[in-house]
Length: 344
Image (cartoon, rainbow, N blue to C red):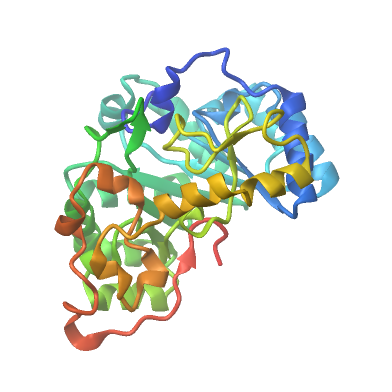
């Protein structure tokens, strides 16, 4: 699709950049050996990966759960859809980009909206399918338009998140970003309608400091299990491998590998040793350093960690982090938020 906010832009979309099936299987077996129970297949667009169905079959054989993150366009092709239904992933996460011909053309530069819509509608025939939206717009009403389109296609729920800066050649790509304050305002203005449309079955992957949000709304969304805070990088709960077997801490940091299959590790034991090594631990420590001194003594720092650290290459922390305890109207107390990686 070439969506203008996609972190994959840094790969220059080289069609030869595909993970060989043998490497994918080696990685999966190693992951299972270290206790990993689920794998997410993501791109770019993973339905373009020719070994996808073969991989799914092998994952099912060994009891590994899989999630496909897809724009569903290929599901609009009859032959591919029939083949995928024979060997589907355990879960299918549908990334909804647009809600009509005009918005689709704006996001992708292409006009095959109807094929994508057909694919999305077909995917919702799967009980495991769920809808997600990365919001990058300027008009908060577009959030509701995307939500209504998802419902029209068969969605029973929706997860919304802001776009994250992608770091390419040492610099953050930020032209596509919706300013964090505008994203917050868009959710606040449309929360009641989103809650009504999905009968409460929607969630926000915050990625931003909790102190940017109205306290009562955060408390309400947490009580209703509608909010995700932090990510696998912040609580070090997941591994990412690119097509070459390089270990990444985040999809948006493709130029900053922290290891490589076949070089730094070759099996489960050497992988565990590598991710526990001093250089890797120090890398994570630097990435998760609090962006503001206000976070260090904050009573909810364990929930948001100051937000996604990648935003602070674009925005000043002092402009986003207000402090929960110093500006907490009504003294709202929080319980636990859900983890965006494992949904717990």
